[in-house]
Image (cartoon, rainbow, N blue to C red; front, side, top):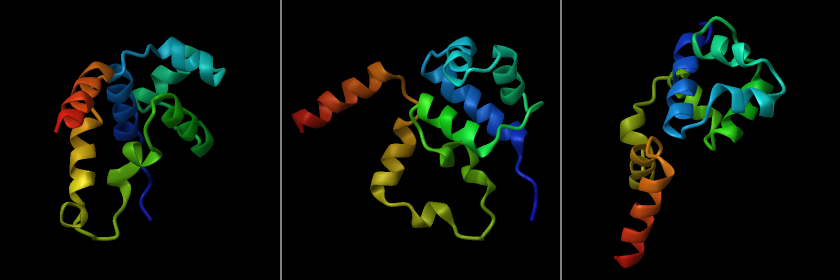
Length: 110
């Protein structure tokens, strides 16, 4: 088994945090850790425990799979396996809350 790619995981955490306009300090406060630890995780210099990764996912309102999804190597073609709902959710997960609310209003109109 290969080790997890913590650099990529950290980049995904950073991208999600920035998309939600959340600071490293805010996450650190909720995790009861030093902001430099959050920075080290995002840069791949520190490896978060599973417990910490779950807490980060909860703070950033996403699943742990969002961070480690590319780590699975069991050979399934994920694009072929995705439902239409999954494909829509993939596109929405990077939008900020304002864009999501606008999209929700448009869906209500339909």
